Image (tube, rainbow, N blue to C red):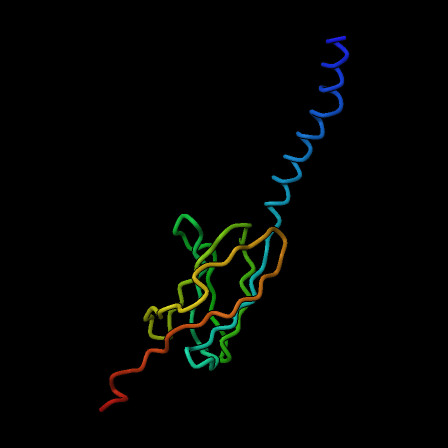
Length: 127
């Protein structure tokens, strides 16, 4: 009787468990995309910035330039995970990201995100 129970576990339950783990591992490798819109603290599109997607290890996963309307599509090398953003203006100055503080990306999904940053005002504008 014990042998029958053992055979039942080996041939029915174990393959199911292994199959689920293989499917999970395979699905995590499906690339994702992020549609980005950058706006300032007055909700005005902020163009000509560079947006970097930072992974949980602090490394840049992908980066790209936004167009004049602050839009861009990040799509190369984005795996499932939690990410933060670094946004720099045309002079290379890092802008303060107001929101979101982070985003969660699921495998094979397209995430749309609006990044709100604090606009830097050049000191020369005050002269």
